[in-house]
Image (cartoon, rainbow, N blue to C red; front, side):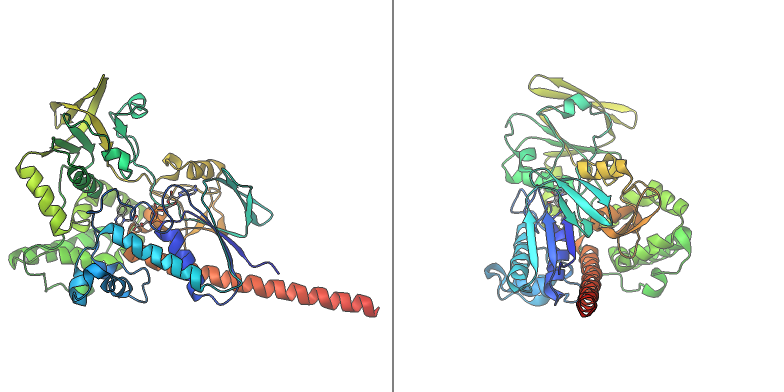
Length: 487
Ligand SMILES: Cc1cc2nc3c(=O)[nH]c(=O)nc-3n(C[C@H](O)[C@H](O)[C@H](O)COP(=O)(O)OP(=O)(O)OC[C@H]3O[C@@H](n4cnc5c(N)ncnc54)[C@H](O)[C@@H]3O)c2cc1C
């Protein structure tokens, strides 16, 4: 009797923790394939940092891989030699190193392998999946270096694709050695000329990570950054009393659309200002409801939000731990870090150097740098993705971009994919940042851990039904045989 074959493409947090949940909670035999290429299993891009001093950007208390056990990460942290003896609340409020979080995920992965049901099979292919084809109610997954895999269910857990090429940067230049399109590889901060400056395009958390990594690597020259809104990342916890007067009832779903939400937020922001307390808690308190609020918006409201409020929301929501924030403030104070509000309009590759022209609100600035690092954030539109698998699937129509072009079109409740022809594919799922356009908040562990748990429960149920079906078919087969032999 063949168990249900489940293939997960992508073995970062989402793919690995879905499998861990399946192996942890399931009592029947399973056959899981994980296809993962590019980053270590479970750690993915985020938790294989290119600097050991990079910290999580979410407090440890919110980083449990299991939503039903919110203290799971903090309890694990407490057992690590460097954190022994620290009170739980302090650990929960702190920001652990990302590398250490990667160790936590590796530990969970290894534990799940050890304790899995004896009948369950888990095969990891360190390989790249470049196509998935649907035929006869099954999926056929094409791998670069292995034979085609047949599977009943496929999960696209492909994670963060590379940022798109910023406007003003010529394609020919992007192919050369002075352009770093993948800000998460060690190469982007390696082999630096001590005499030249660096330009980072983008001013979000990836820029902050890259600056920290450059400084840690001993880079002493000027780091320029550019983006339309400039640098606007706030500190995670302000040195102010938290805003206590938040009426969470009215902050949560009042179904009053974008304008109602804005009015409520503004009311609370003014009240926080008047009491000189930190308004960030208002945004933080919305986090568990953000997906619901997003789903309640009309398409037009979502577009308006993206056009006018995305940046403001991002700077209130994605904040930096105090250490990193202070380090960056120190670099600004000494002019080692200089930020421009503007965009790149011209790039000239001139022997060892790159001449860059920025347009800063009509004023042109000329920079001479040794390299450009693209930190503009992952491209999530499957049609434009650096991930060839997603581009191929979008071209074949098995998947399509959501209405906002921010991810894959899928059911908000379970990530079940909706094809280009509008067909719901009951055995094809996606998880994580591919659901950004559908759920908006589909980026970090607090929501991804919930998605992984729910998807695992759904797949376990499918496996159970599959087993029942197989048993019934077997019984019917035996009965038929008995009748035949009696006859
Ligand atoms: C630098 C960085 C730091 C972050 N820090 C935090 C943080 O502190 N806290 C937080 O909550 N969130 C953080 N995040 C958000 C992060 O995206 C999630 O926490 C989570 O790691 C995402 O996991 P994932 O599995 O969706 O994606 P990924 O980690 O990107 O994993 C996907 C994996 O699939 C592989 N893959 C993709 N396509 C294929 C294919 N076709 N064939 C084979 N393999 C494939 C990729 O190579 C990769 O290994 C961070 C993100 C980044 C990029």
